[in-house]
Image 1 (tube, rainbow over the protein chains, first blue to last red):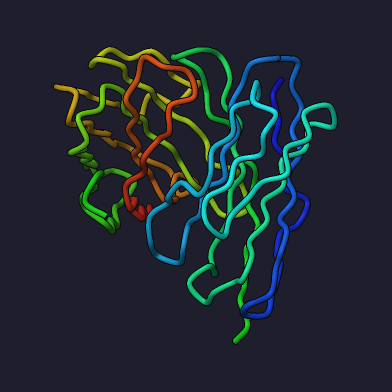
Image 2: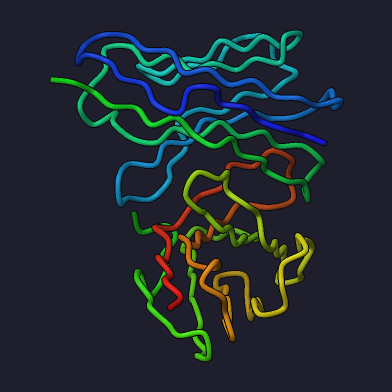
Amino acid sequence: AQTVTQSQPEMSVQEAETVTLSCTYDTSESDYYLFWYKQPPSRQMILVIRQEAYKQQNATENRFSVNFQKAAKSFSLKISDSQLGDAAMYFCAFFYGGSQGNLIFGKGTKLSVKP
Amino acid sequence: ETGVTQTPRHLVMGMTNKKSLKCEQHLGHNAMYWYKQSAKKPLELMFVYSLEERVENNSVPSRFSPECPNSSHLFLHLHTLQPEDSALYLCASSRGGLAGDTQYFGPGTRLTVL
């Protein structure tokens, strides 16, 4: 069975600092996709970043970047120059199974940003 | 936040009531999803529709009944729910047809079952 583990239920970062959220997954698949989603309080979930497993290069989106270690099955999210608007629940998700496949989510990490 | 809309945003119902949740996507996508988000638990996929046909039903109790009349609309009909069904119900859509398509989520309906 595919599983996604986020070992940090809560994290805190000072504004303008850098924080890394961890995510590990378990799978026997070789072709899959990984995502980080952000869910601000009382607002809808939005995509932060997407990584294709066959690509060795780590995905980046402005202040957000990932450290994808396929052999270790690790997919951490780094947020640089943290802003107050980054405070949210962050969910790591794993997609497998072709076009009709499933998106499996971790339990999430609640990130607080201190001014 | 207008890509995927959900109504109502909040719903309180008794165990004997019948209600429906509505989802509409304005993105031209072909696949739509229902998820259940409970506190302290990962999001649980409930139903997947692709081109208006159900392709996934993750062992969801029959008191939840989905309906997808066209590729833009998705409903979740609720009847004789239990208090443990209280949760945030999220709708999502994706282009469909391609593995790993990004899913776009609606704001959710906060359901409370008394």
